[in-house]
Amino acid sequence: MNSIGTTPYELVYGLDVVLPLEVTMRSNRLAKHLDIPIDKYSEALSIEMQDLEGKRIVAFNHLVAQKKKVERSYNKKVKSKLFSKGELVWKTILPVGFKSPEYGKWFPDWDGPFKIHMVLRGGAYHLASLEDEPHRRIINGKYLKKYYPTIWECMSSYT
Image 1 (cartoon, rainbow, N blue to C red):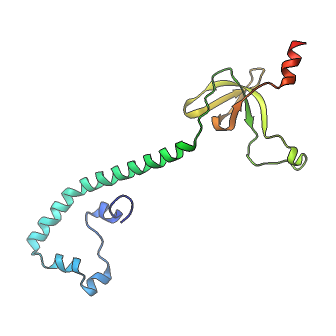
Image 2 (image 1 turned 120 degrees about the vertical axis):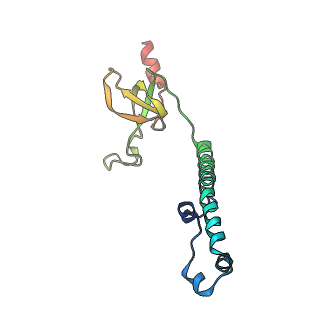
Image 3 (image 1 turned 60 degrees about the vertical axis):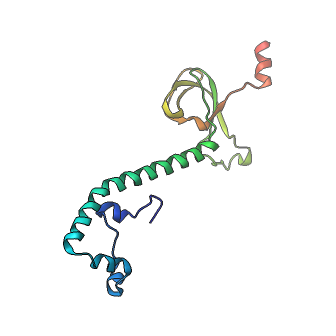
């Protein structure tokens, strides 16, 4: 038996599997089935087959509940980032963890700034350069962070 409350074999065939050892050793479960007359056994088997759809529905509901539990657990740790069209963002340099031997530890982690060209479903974004040239690839929002100009950029705009 597993986390869905029944065995996969039982969900497919309506009955639990009988192991060869149970036949030779004549287990209590098998002895109970052998003592039932054939007509009663076939009637019980047909009732089991009718109940099979209900067992499948219950197993499916268990599976859905488990997936929702895992989703809630995962989403507790996820910090959603929402950006709007035209907003300036930094993009992480992919693949994450790649370091150029040329720069060593001084290799930059973020590239940009870029403009949000288009907001897509599921936290995906289409970026464009500052000159409004769209990028070919779409990027997940978890690889972006909001762009804040440095103090030097702010000061140079006043002069």
